[in-house]
Structure formats: structure tokens, C-alpha cells
Length: 582
Image (cartoon, one colour):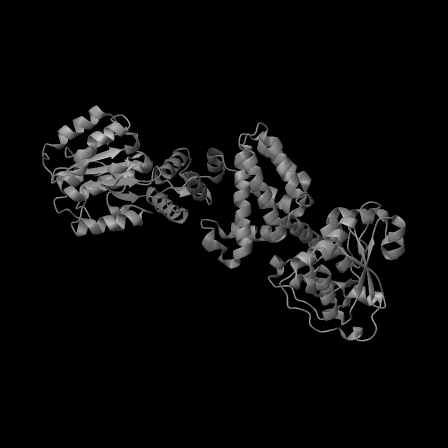
């Protein structure tokens, strides 16, 4: 019979206790300076070392060389209170769950009167102290308040609030905490080395995550994996299956499919999750954890290894590629959707349905009407037309001082190839508004301004407007320049509601007029036009009307109202009427 790991590796000194320096340091100082209290309250989550610390404190107090902060380990008291010892007559451990009444408190009081049999102190350790009834605590109150000189009390509990205030106020309270993942991982690696057990990459990370910061729980799980391993090696596949986590290969397949929008592969992977009997909620938790790791990789860059401990270099490289394929906006969108779905799946009668609906929402950013969803749609459009993302280039967007053109490029299958402005000249309209303002009038506009020149400068005007007023920019970015004659600028609004918003927003017209003056140097008067009829739109947008109908419909589906502005500025196409499709 083999002793459990958590018993074989139970600490025997405060120095061996991991992750509880906030408790061990002051306790050792009190022992060194001989300022030991008569009663202590140790509280904290399960498996973090409360009862173990109580035993260590008892060893320190009754050591032949003590009281000391480091037991000698050789005297009879230290040997009896060691992990292999049989216990001491002068150290009494009481299970408060089964000894919680007035009669039990009265019996303890009677035993406390007698002097220690051999050692310096008679020490009472009450485990699960929150189980003692109010009457039991009240019966103990007098002896805890004024005990004999040879008596010490140590209460250990996971719920200190249930210990009545009159008892708590007479103790020194030391709160224990869960052990941090990095420290737990390092401890398990040392333990596996001393046990001469080979562990596959990624297994210990699963154990640490499943243990949740509890040393005892983590050691119990590792003990179970070691017991079920063959040839002295703990394999990743067996550990992932036993602990119930999603296999790394399946998670990578799902994430890669999400990044490229491959719905068939996504739902095939979901079916594999269900057919293998995995809990859908656990899969969603694992997916959210992986998305969080990708966001960290994309945000931190080369410093991700210091944050994501326990991950192999090749796995980290693969995560970097996944993060770049996703992009920050789509990653954030996906994480928001998964997080909301995880909350909604609590108590759901059909978790598979919730899981599949979640995947559909992640695949279609248009379903998210928030700013994050809009940015995700823009990011997807940029990748389709070949615009490098900020994550891939690691360089900020630059504002050009004048529009420029480049040779036509192929854009398939969303729109036809067309001359386009340089990315630098339109990027601020997408990534607004953190750019330098445009303060000079372009050279080609020093003379009279016509409609074509006004349209060419519209992206710069919107960029400058975004720097001045985000609220006005949100209204103006859907507007289209129809005509400029004299000093009258005709602007097309998509609906009467947009026009009403423009009129009702305080300072909207003045802000737009000021941006036009700063870019083109002309004062204008506004004339609104609403795209209500197909004839009106065909008259004002011959270029858009000449495009194939199916291409225009794809443009509307891809960009909606937010994407129309981007396609107009980048590809030189006018917006399309949502009602007529022309």
C-alpha cells in the first residue's frame, strides 16, 4: 500500500509551506521573539495548509529547543508530531464537526485543567471550527478568554464568519490563501522529479488548473494520474480525458476554423465534442480560456511566456500565429460571445443548442451591433482586401496629407478591382481618432473646388472630424457627397432618421463645416438629400448603379452601414440602397 502524495509530502516546518508567506513570516517572528498568543484562528480555502500549520506551530511550541521557529526534528515531541509520527498526548486534535455541542465544550474545559503529560504546553487544535454551535462557543468562551498558562488553542476553519465574534476577538487571526499557479507548477515539477515520474508537456498545467490553487487537491489529482500511468510516464491524452479538459488538437482545430470563418469545420468539431461525451459547458470554459491566452499573446508580444507559464515554445509560436490570424477586434468579439454563452448555459436544458448558437454568433460578427462587433467586421473586411492588420504589422496607422492613388488590385470575391486610395490616406477613417490632425490644404485644391475633388477629400474630412467630435463622426461617416456647386454642398443621407439625428445633434453642422474649412479651405452650406427612391440614387450614383447586382448585395451584407463608409473610401464605390440594392 502506497501512502497518498499529500500525506507523504506534508510540510514539517514553516519553511516547507508554499504560498503562505503572509502567515509563516509573522508566525516565525512571533516564535523567535517569544510573543506567542494563547489562541489562534487559521482560516482559508480547503487544502491550503491550515491544519498542517497548526501541527507545525505545535511542534515549534513543544520542541525541546523551543519555543523556536524551526523544530529540531529529533526530540520526542518533534518525532511524534512529524508526518510519520503517531501523535502526542499533549497535542489534542478535535474534529469540531462531530464535537460541536455544549457537552463537548464542557469536556474540553475539564481536560484543559490538567497539566501537560510531558511537554511544555497542552495544545488543542479544533478543525472545522465553524461547525461548533453558538452554545458550544459560548461554553468555551471563558477558558479561551483566560486559559491556564499551559494551554494553547488553534482554531482552523474555512468559514471564519461563522465563528462568533467573541471568540474571534480573543484570537490572532491568520488568513490563508490559494497557492498561485506559477508557484504550484514549480512545486509539482519538483515533486515529480523527486518521485522520478516523467510527465508529458501540458499535463502539469492541467493539474494546476483543475486543482484550483489547493495543494491537497492538486497532489491528489497528480497522484491519481501517476497511479494510472504506464511505463512511468503520464501521457497528455490520458490526463486530458481523465480531468475532463478539451484536447489541445481539438481546441486548435476549432480556433483555426473560427479565425478563417470555416463554419463546416467548426460545427464538425462541435459534433466531435458531443459524440465523445464531453461536457459542452467545460468545452466553452476551455475555449474562453484559450481565447484569453490568445489575447494575452497578441497584447504582450514577446513577454507572453512570462505570463503564460508552463506552455512549451512550439505551442506558444502556434498561439502567436492563431492570434495574428484572428486579430484583436475579432478575438475580443469572440471572447465576449463565448463569455455570455457560458453564463447562459448555466442550468440550460439543451447545452448543445446553446453551444451551436454560440459558434454561429462568433462566425457572424454582423450579429453583434456593438462597437466591438463593428470593429470585428471591419477587421475581416481589411483582411479580404489585403490591408495588413495592426497586430500583423505592429505599426500604428499613418495619416497622409493628401489623397494618393495606386494601381488597381484584384479584390475577389467581394467587389470588382478598382483604383483605390492609399491605405495610409484612409486608415484613420477606420482606426479613428488617434492620429495627427490634417492642418494643410492639399496643393491641388488651391483653386476652385469641384464635386470630384470634394469626394476625394471626404476621407480626410471624416478623419479630422473624428478627432474633433466622435459623436458627430458617428453620424457623418455614412454621408455621401452628391454635388458641390458654388458654396452649396449636397449630402445624401441614408434615411430620414439619419437626417433628423444630424439636425438634432448640437454643433454637428458647425463641426462638419469647420473640418471642411480646415481640409479644403472653403465655406459651405449644406443641402440634404435622402436616398428614398431608386431613380434618385441612380441619378446621383452612376458608378454604383453600373456594378453587378450580386456584387452590390455582397457589399451590403459584409459591411452593413458601418462597412459602407470603408468600402466607399477604400474601393471608390458609393453606398448602396438597402431597400433597392442598386
